[in-house]
Image (cartoon, rainbow, N blue to C red; front, side, top):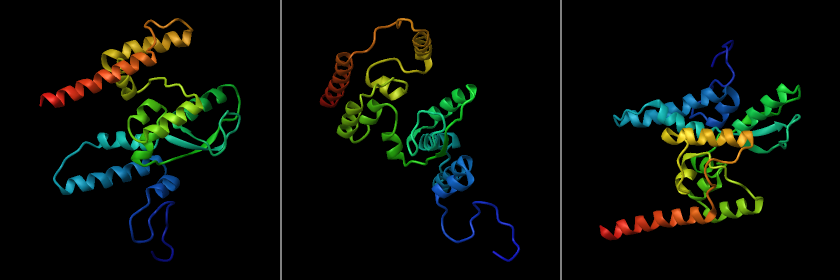
Length: 210
């Protein structure tokens, strides 16, 4: 640095690696996404491995899906509460349409493990790590898993909301919004347990045959 030099917000003026959380706070989501993607790609490029950026960006997107409420405004959120970024955007859109004050928030950067455990689906989180804690907290809070993601639908033996199963899930969402009865019966706890047991038995049987 020298006297009179122009410095932009977030520019590095000292030696050493940059802190991703500081990049997010000072320069925003796009800057921290580029930084993480480039850092990961550098490791693979040194080994002569080529990976499309989109695969790393999918992971970074999950790491950035949470936001902390700074000012609740007219919303039902609490100050300091950590919620899904998409929920805040939807709530603010509805509040602005009604002429109310939306919530202000700051984006969070979570580690891969924390991001996996902080998912809205407790079934998906419980299948990853800390199963007892996740299921206990879900039971105490009376949570209901809406089965929106791929993993939780695979666990309970349902069509995933992608490919040939996309139309089914879109129709289910439309019927729920219209207050109609679902086209297919709801999956019960007994069905989910039977499906999971069948998968486990199939896996054990395959290892015995080997």
